[in-house]
Length: 259
Image 1 (cartoon, helix red, strand yellow):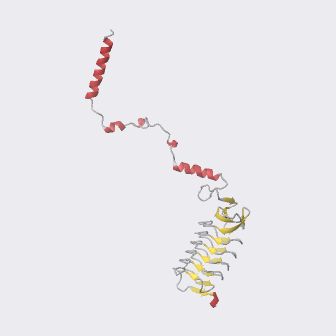
Image 2 (cartoon, helix red, strand yellow):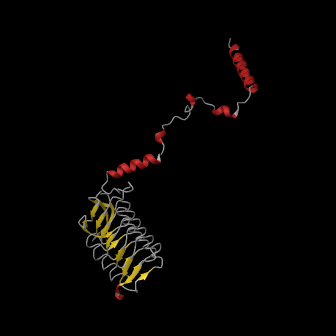
Image 3 (tube, one colour):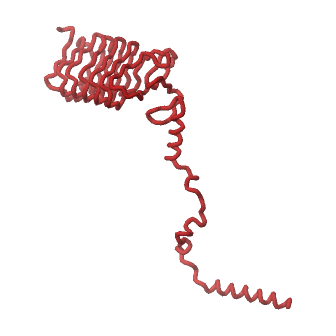
């Protein structure tokens, strides 16, 4: 009996070897031909366990909503951005003033506060009111010295804006695309008008600059089809040759010192 068991085992081994040797090798595709029920048999994971960029963004945005320094435009947290009411702002380097960064209000007539977070507003920062198509009038407070790049870009319902004495610069494309703008009070202190500052101001008919004006930049009034009169203090003002491209041929450029 003891000899019978090893002999039987040996016979089975030889039989198995013969079957394996004579069988055809499976086709390459056979290794991956799983039925629907077998699709994840060897890869059992949860899809959500992998990094999902969109989900991570949503989580970051949700977290940002709960922070004091939430950037209301992009949804990302900015540790330097502070809020006071409807305004986001940055503190200036000398810590003595602040710069507006964004507006999250819904007023059609905007009276910008003179102080934010207890600090005087010294500058209307880049893009602060950009694309706010519902704004119709704006009053800039005393103490502001600079209006930033694209600060009111494409505010296409903006009809009038008041700039106080003390403002010395209007940034590039500041009022670009403000197609309804037809009234702007320009202070005597204004020195520079940036590139494309009034690009596409379709309703602007007249503008008078004060004695402080020094430069009018490239394409500053490009495509202002209703612009009929521009008054500058003297011929000493550096006006870029492209400043009035696509404006009416009959546009009058008046030098105040020659009147």
